[in-house]
Length: 216
Image 1 (cartoon, rainbow, N blue to C red):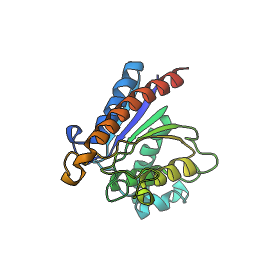
Image 2: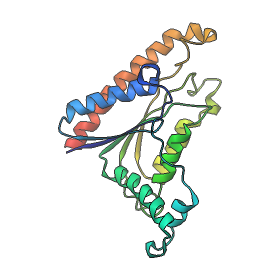
Image 3: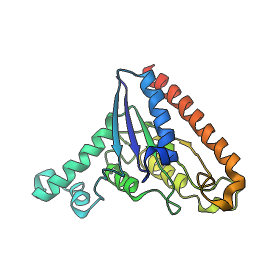
């Protein structure tokens, strides 16, 4: 049966989070297509994974027989996250833009699962894995906009997920999410609403396509 690894990293609950609303729509459609499947869910805001430390990092480059008890424990936690990624048939990530980048909790997860010689490198164990990223943001950083040069979320995630892990990445981008709460952006509310609706439609379509592909 198909396995979806679903990660959310928004600080806000579903009712107040653009990224969570879209990942929820994707997951609902996926589960409708794979009612007997498995969803591994991690809310990285509510239950953050540890930031990569010297114990977990150094253990990756040492013979397991030489690991100290502390190294062994830290590396075991890292391997748990790696194995969750490896067993997934598809990955769904909610990645809101905070201060021009991704939440630190999502960065911590990426650091833990990027393991050279296993998930990262020419022979990556997750090469070709389809990853859908919901990259929400309060403004717009699309090509041709004044803030295009400050788009670090998609650029960074594509570099890590594609260049390091060899995954296949697709982005869904709900933008202008602050329009309804920022008076200076009031005239952008129609565009924000259109972006949200398009993101929800894209989530449904992408979930159906990936579900069918995994089932084939």
